[in-house]
Amino acid sequence: MSISENDKALIKESFILIDQNSTVFSRHFYDCLFTLEPMVKPLFKAERNLIEKHFITLITLCVKKIDNFSEMNDQLFKLGQAHRYLKVKESQLAIVRKALVLSIEYELRSKCTPSIINAWSNYIDLISAQMIAGLNSEAAL
Ligand code: HEM
Image (tube, rainbow, N blue to C red; front, side):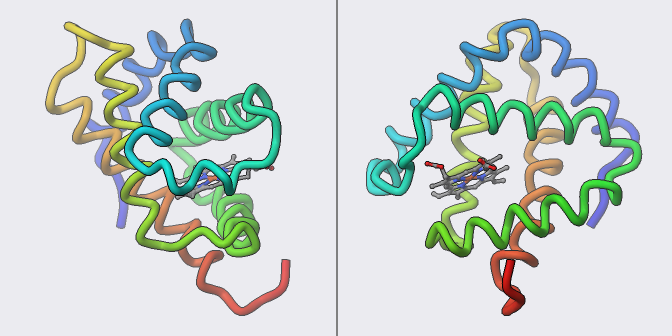
């Protein structure tokens, strides 16, 4: 699994706008997630602001590392392992993808295009694949 140069360019370019409004963006992301899948809400114990901050920090890092994605491998594997302890299921990653797409569409509004959504979907699949490896690994964290 890899991501095309065209997708990389679309992600970097669209992230400039998302990053300018990252606090609102991450709030919308969790609003979407909890609306799509209310059952997961009780899993989240930390303060909402902190959860949002951690999420946007990770996405920002993933965008920065998009040209050297293998440098993210260890961190994402460990994040997947941590999610195993949080009782997250592999099937729930699809909801995160959907919530991310909805919050990107909302953030970019008229500037959003199907190619941008496709690029982000591909990238979240790549990120998720590395997390899934950690999620399904037997190794202790
Ligand atoms: C690509 C998918 C995902 C990414 C990038 C992601 C990212 C993160 C990050 C960065 C954290 C913060 C970890 C820390 O504090 O060090 C976190 C925590 C968490 N994530 Fe995820 N996550 C993903 C998928 C999921 C899914 C599918 C679920 C469950 C529905 C989930 C549930 C949680 C929970 C319960 C926490 C802990 C929050 C707390 O401390 O209260 N995550 N996630």
